[in-house]
Length: 303
Image (cartoon, rainbow, N blue to C red; front, top):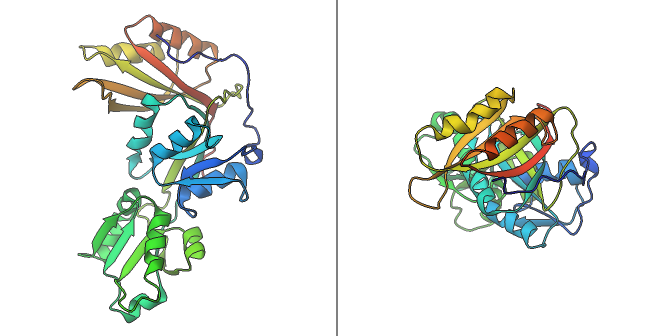
């Protein structure tokens, strides 16, 4: 069964993503100064009515309930892999993917100037993905230093900035970007500390109804739920091979319906209105699968 009705009507064109109307608001993983905030500004500019939230799931909720018209979430990083909380949120959400954006991530180690007057760096805070993306640097220059995961890079910068002016500085430094350094008044101790030179995060733009027209260079995302039976994955993937559809991502996630049942997050090249994609989706419907269409959208250009 194809859960989401495939809309033939074009509701939005993403040819000029930097000129999108933000509507009543744009929800993103906050606070201000996160990489998600930076990605969101690529679509809406700097002066949009922002709706920062503290958790990726809250981005989905804000758009679903009408608190915001759009949501921006990270979905995967080239070094650390998928953001599983984003993939899992699609299972219970009615939102659609409208566009994607690739952001080159350049991490900095940030602290207040006062930190060095109070014994130096004793603890480094950041988002768990960022800590992973800087693992080699941290092991080399800060072995044994306490590493603490927080909800976002900007939240890490905010915590480090709180130490400024304290009589007893607790030695907190943060891993975040240049924007967070400027916003929270922090000194850049070291920059470009990510372990790989092409460290890139992919972000998704979410909306309640945002089907795009085919551009000839598109991607489509599906969530496929299947019974735990021999050959299930083979049968789910065979139509893609049969109709020449190129998969770009396949991720297995617990369905959370029953123990040891799974859902497959699938991305592939092509648009839902392309003939070979139509044939693939039709073939999937003949199987004992639940297929949820998450959106067709223009492929982001590599950075």
